[in-house]
Image (cartoon, rainbow, N blue to C red; front, top):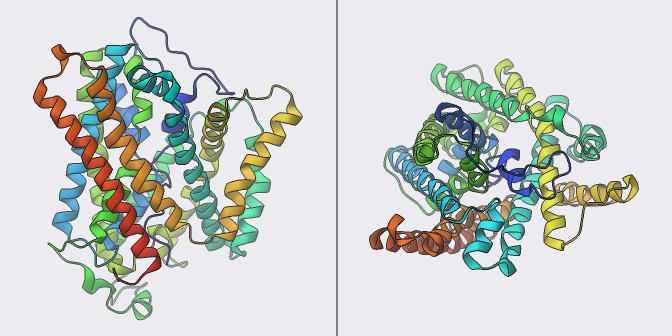
Length: 438
């Protein structure tokens, strides 16, 4: 079974990863012009909702099933808490931009802690994008294997040769600018399949696709209303990545017309995303219980026509988004290393293909990347959502915009993020290498 922590598919959307790379991005440079944006509050809410929601939603049922499982009510409470805190820290980034006039997330960090430490943000983005690329390779290979029956390694190599490889060599990715919308459509298609199959009982004892129960006896016995276990930490880690879009907050703040409504936009978008997450998370868990795969679509029968539609939609979405994600990885890597993206084709192609080979080979030699991705979820997710925004806020917000009690609360959020990261890492190690949480 795939580890439930294959969560970076893709809670971190291509928009969220590529947005801060404006100074190096090959397809289009995006330098924010001062003087106010033109986006309305409603449009900004929809845009942020699209940025938040990604394929990571398909891992949440497995988060509910981790270790001894999490009950429905505690699971929804953890989700609501995470959505609320994430909305607050996202808005906190916008307030910090207003105070510093920073143009990128790295510059915002530099305003707070000095430009000499801006490499920390580049390193975090490289880790997030690299982990997402690795998971993309794994899941696209798995989906193609499910659809065609081809060997997983061959599936990964075939997809890398075409279409991923050629697309990674393009400098102008404007043709893929609507891939986020395609990804959102795929998520909604998958959500409809998950919810409808949960309601119609097709995967129950007497359902048409209930044969899976013979191979997973007792899987549904895990489902409860109030249970809490150490696996609840895994669910929290997954949500840290599922709500991770904070590097995009700098650009989003500048593009918003009524800037005083930035916090309201965050609250509405995270609330909508949380609602969708909750429906899918509970529906998938009620259907498969403790047998939930890291990609819940993998639980569905190959003869289920609705599942095949969801597989195809998700595969197309991932393939169309991969080049945008890879651009973010390539640009962040160049920024971290202090090099300029080559202008000539051959050096550019060599750099791109060499970098592309890393997640591709890792996906082949490490079939279960759950341990690696879970560690990044526990550390990078907590860092970007909790620790970094709170630390920046305590340093750059003037006293007139931040009371002593709120400043203390921000320190508490940062400390909580550190503790969550350490605890989540420990749980991940125990779940992967021991049977203590079984």
